[in-house]
Image (cartoon, rainbow, N blue to C red; front, side, top):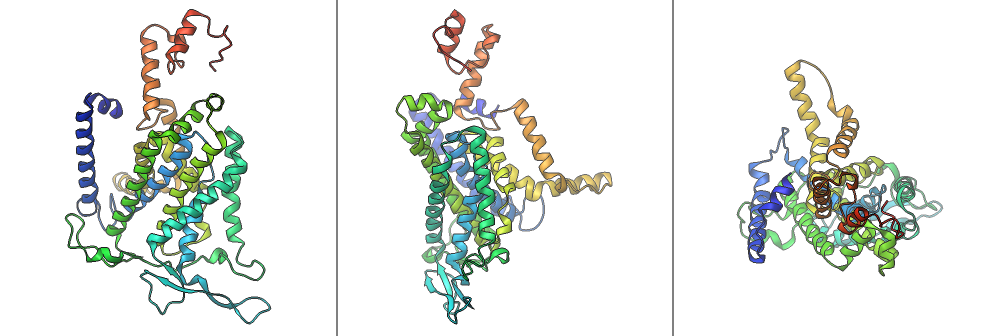
Length: 437
């Protein structure tokens, strides 16, 4: 309903649309900048600032998966793999793990002896590899994108449920590989279930020399673990960059190719769209967002442990994309924020209010996935296009409603293509060899 309302409120002229867009962007920036000081709280409550940061992180994950599922129409149940690669890249390049004093089996030499410091907040006395966070997220994006290409190359030849099963397999196998790589030919590559930490704090570099900024305030030289306000601004900037990339790709040649594959893969191939290369691009771009989010998440928790990378993560992010509206950038953000808030704060907060009012002791957190499943069932029944439908979904719904109002109830579902409706009305669509199913 909101999407329909705002679509009706848009001016018809290009100048009016541009003014409205600029005004909306300015208003959105002001609202976002005011959240840490005027909306969220630093303590437990309805909206803790730590939860707001996590909402933004999961929004970034949802934006990445929306490229794969929403734009290209590829069902991916192994998105946790890209989260894993990004987090471990941060762990390798922002900790003392690169300098292991334990000797390799059968040798008196250290396993690793790296001691690198490059624009980092870590002290020079701490051994290991310590690289600036701003370079690490670039490396994490590249590594995750390359992993997306390696995973996608053998799997994207499959379709539908088979693709979902294979990606699910990769999402389950890769964490087990990292879990059991604490002794590979005598080398400790991942530290197994013990994890890698502590991960370095984020250094702001020369930005802390800037004067005090409105709404933001003074930028600290180092973002400490308790500084959720500055972390929020950092992840919002990363989300904004990926929103810009998503919108540009969606409206460009590659985005149109993705949507052509999503609508009809056979028709897209007949029109000259290179299927494998186009699908691989969607995997690579979506994986890059997962890698960046994983690297940032590692700096939030301060350590990287393989037990954090479970199948449940992939399902939560997929639910966020479905709930928000597949193929809609803003819908993916909304879905990620809503599901993350309910998962980390909402259920506990609502459960506390209910228990205090009724005198019960129900822990809603224990029923988290059951409630998520119920919400998805309700959404599929009453609003399958999501909270904020993509433009294509709104057009299909509008065409179906128009067809129903014209008295062609039997043709509901074919409204996405007016030519199909006309052919079926005249009775020669199937005779011409056209299969509308």
